[in-house]
Image (cartoon, rainbow, N blue to C red):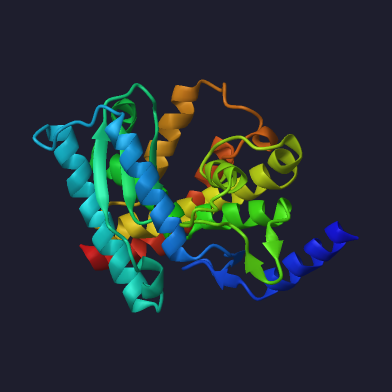
Length: 276
């Protein structure tokens, strides 16, 4: 009975905590206060940088990361401020860092905290390719995908009580379970039932959404959106057909991603034309 009551309270609160993603209009569950998400993000980001080999901005590649990141930032701020979403940018403290690593990856945590691994640069090849990656990763932060995943994790773990989120974030009562949910929301594998039943399918939806927003943002920043298709085609070839089945992946298949981007291209071209 106790579990049933918690679930009912969780669902009741969830109904009142829905927001809409910019551009796509998709409804999402957002339960964790923005200040708490930013606090955890900034702490995690600093800890990562302190233990990583950050490449100085005097390096040409690092300077490029800053240059492209700043153009994406200006495009994002322009779109958000012009379309009534400026509240989502409150508390953002943008940073762009290139980190020495063979990983073919990049990410953006809440608050505009961006990391690009040097291992992805041979695949981006040029500024437009890098803009594709940064536009995509920044879109995850703008769409609050991490908060959404964490909110779903709180609901799934019964951590909603009497209409409030029992996270303990920012207090001495911060729980290990809450920390685990935060880490899961940003890539740490969770329980199989959540992973395959909810987590991965929803992550694929979020990845496609980030592709959509990222394509628009890179276009607004003055980068040819056709380069996004070129980049993802190049990544697909680099994978050599070894990508996991889409059902077991947190990303759309290469074929679906490219097909979806092609459908979005005409709209993105309009933003690109206006930015030139």
